[in-house]
Length: 343
Ligand SMILES: Nc1nc2c(ncn2[C@@H]2O[C@H](COP(=O)(O)OP(=O)(O)OP(=O)(O)O)[C@@H](O)[C@H]2O)c(=O)[nH]1
Ligand SMILES: [Mg+2]
Image (cartoon, rainbow, N blue to C red; front, side, top):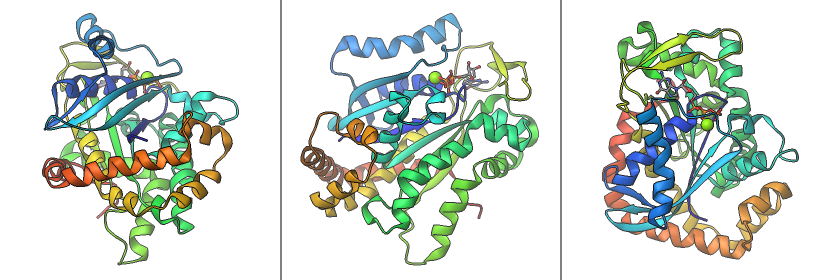
């Protein structure tokens, strides 16, 4: 098992555009983190769609199925771990695992992730009635998945599975109406908490329950991002009902805030690694055996539970060794993200 951050969200929320920008930035390096594909051709392949987007000034096509890119993640030129980045078709959230391979893989990815990046369209959240914003962002489905794979096991006292980092990426911030931007995006944050209140309420209750709860168990933050930057896109059709808005691309992209959710996820992932080192092989086996078979097969990918366990321990050790250095980088991201819990 490699270090794992899973990105998901509803249809048309901006996942692919965000992923292309992030992978492009990470190919040269973000604050010491860098990715390398296994060979030059693989790098060319994942860099190409971003180039097409920039040069042809055309939004990426809706994702069909899923797209997975596999890299080595390096920090200050030291390989840390294998790193898989998966981009799902938004529809994968709304399908049961026995009807779709992608859905089963998404469930598996969430189960074995310590951090998730949820992508939701800020323009939709800001401009639509609550029920439309919930449907369009799939916020209830997202809560359902997190609840099934993360929150419930935590409530059942499954220590190692306790805690997850949640980064909510609020895309298309460049076209937000002014009233949602003033006061450092207060209007957008309030509204996003309402749309994602299932997640917010769970985390808030966990925090409230016990003062001894380690504060890092449910780090959850949100941030407005734009791939194109201010003034480089405009609303072509605001959309209505359960149709999303469409946008024209007018200028060269200048991504804003794209790397912070990623650094936030990595930084908080470190905290869970202490737990991984305490984990027993038998505990992992017991937990995996409670999963539905479709989901378990996707997690194992042909490996035994023992192999998964060993890989996990190796990554945890590596991260622990690099921890002080990595912390210095990720603490900046922690300050940039706004807490999901209202203060
Ligand atoms: N204004 C603006 N629009 C954006 C931005 N990013 C994405 N969009 C719009 O959102 C649309 C959908 O983006 P995608 O990245 O394809 O969304 P997705 O979540 O991957 O969608 P599926 O693969 O269909 O689930 C794009 O075609 C653009 O119209 C942004 O930074 N600013
Ligand atoms: Mg997509």
